Image (cartoon, rainbow, N blue to C red; front, side, top):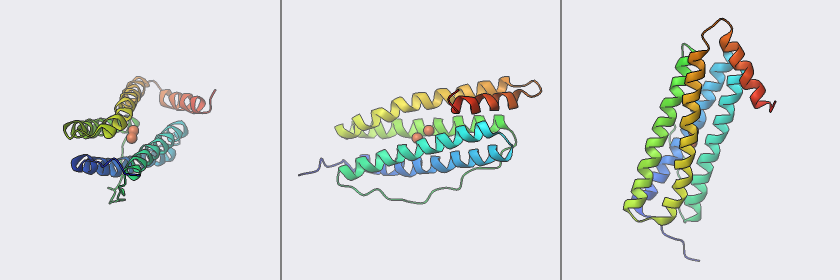
Length: 168
Ligand SMILES: [Fe+2]
Ligand SMILES: [Fe+2]
């Protein structure tokens, strides 16, 4: 059965996005480890969950490329930032990660549009929607962490997240 040939710039963009999603796996893993060291187990759980989602984002791209007869490359992944001084710094960093991801996804989509690659356009629509959710939670995180200023506020927020993840 013939493959629906992917267009060259779209292929390059999706291959790069695959590496980018794999990088996100480690970025969130580092945030989980940082949180664990601060005894913020709720936040650690939240970031582990995000890390797992990033690995699914990567896997979906790999599947799309393979379905179209291409082999994704598992290229070099940058070292994850881990030297944070505060939880608010961590929260703001998640906005940086997701803001950057949104830009890349939008650019990949524009490339697929300009090359007339219809399957890639439809495929990337899922990511465009996903990024709206991702940016929403990072904004909420910054807001909530900024708001937790009173003594014990962060610990309370951390337990709240822990209960939330536990399904309570
Ligand atoms: Fe992602
Ligand atoms: Fe994400």
